[in-house]
Image 1 (spheres, helix red, strand yellow):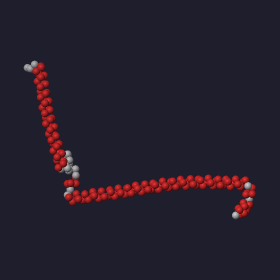
Image 2: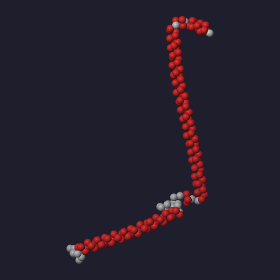
Image 3: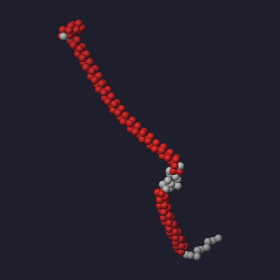
Image 4: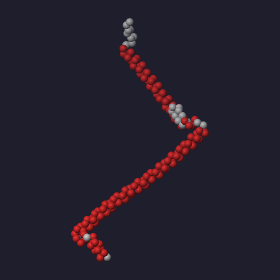
Length: 161
């Protein structure tokens, strides 16, 4: 089977095809504009409904699940919520007190460390003085033969009084 030649010239076929494409494009463009306007309108209505009915979100789900409970259950939940807030406040206050105590303890520890260092320095100075005194006494004992006898040294101190 052979294809019959088109009764229209080749240029006319291309022009008709081009015209059909342009027409389809314009129709699609018009529909798209219409759908965009409709979408904008629906979004505005949704925002209005969200303002009027805040418990319904964009997926139609109930964002406040406790709203569907009875008023007694709601009051109970609100009471528990208040109790939890009070407990959080008490725990926060206790935490603050513990931090203050910790800071005071840190100050006491620093003061203790400072006193301990001073004690060590004084002990070191006392040890140096004792060593110097012992060295001086040793030197004096070896320099003066009269002081080598303990009785002479004791008599010398008694006569000085």
